[in-house]
Amino acid sequence: MAHRRKKRFNLTTPDQLRLIGSPIAIEIIQAIRQKGPISIRDLGPIIGRKPNSLHYHVRKLVKNGFVVQTGTNRSGARSEAVYDVVAEAIVGADLPKNKEMMELTNAGVGSMLRLAQRNWDSASKNPEIVFKEQTITNLRAHRLSARLSEEELHKVNEYIVKILDVFKDSIGSDDGQMCSVTLLLTPLEEYSKKQ
Image (cartoon, rainbow, N blue to C red; front, side, top):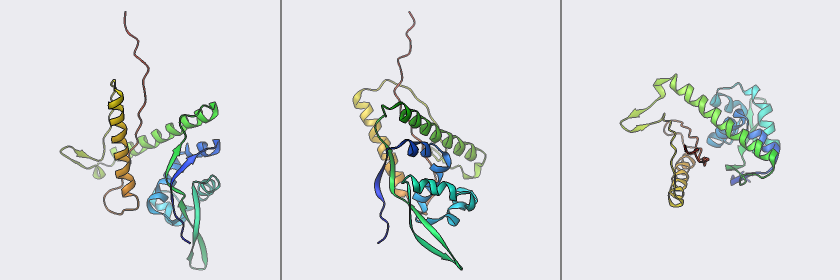
């Protein structure tokens, strides 16, 4: 029977949160989600790493339930394992109350932001991969702060879901250019008011 991805994989342990806090783990999961099922030999070039440097990381992802071996391929006289992600989306629980889980969740968010910064730096140094035509581009950054009503916050969340759906619907496609989006929505403490 072929492996069938679940819709969601819920993060429940400190080890899972520690692992997802690693940019290499995020890269591997994203690449396998996009191109999997896949062997480590084929995965390496996709993320720009030597395959022999990925075995350790893939084993940790398997051990923690993110990735599963779905079969083997023959490569000459050798067999190589083929891996796939267990789910289309990885989700954490609501904001954890446990201090360790909270710190690990914060570290995971930091990891996503560092990876986004690396992607930005790489794209800005390679202008030939940047697309811009009038108001459409594949390289954009914004930061805005505003007071949002409950209705406006609901609308923002709907738009975020729509953006994520565009990406999810394109997983596995070989059409178009690979792009990444990192979204972060946070409440702010009130600015101190001058007397």
